[in-house]
Length: 204
Image (spheres, rainbow, N blue to C red):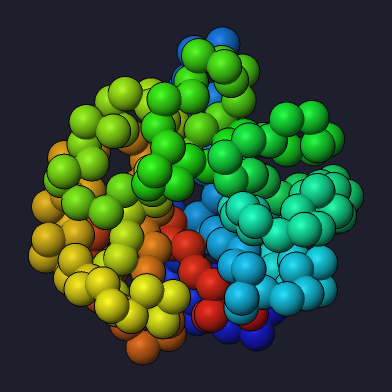
């Protein structure tokens, strides 16, 4: 992996959270990956190649909501997952794509738990206003963003370390930090109550 600093600090963050686990209804306890990679329809053109370079036991969130080759991307990622033991979540609906662990809900979607009782569900949260959304979705994992200014959404003001930490402490589920994280600012997250970090640019 190119960026070892990101990997090592993410691992230390996870350890200080004492290996937090998902304990969802009708599902076994699962150790949550400390390092997550988000696919992006613009930035991540060759997803299989990127996944090959990620460390084993990483988490992968496949978004690509409108990609014509969405199903192909999911299936190829699933094959790589079997070999590298990735934890894969698919944006919106995972259907029956093989070795997929669950579903990632974007900010515009939250009422889906009834249809997918056996899947792990993650959700995007962008502030205290989304607490009700977390409750309604009964999500197992929360991606809280943007902690720093992100090139994916440069028009959005980041939460900043203090506000990010306050929100994270009010969430009763495992929290993964997302948004603008790189080797220059990741150390600032050491005091935050999180279970890991997620990124795009820093892991490409």
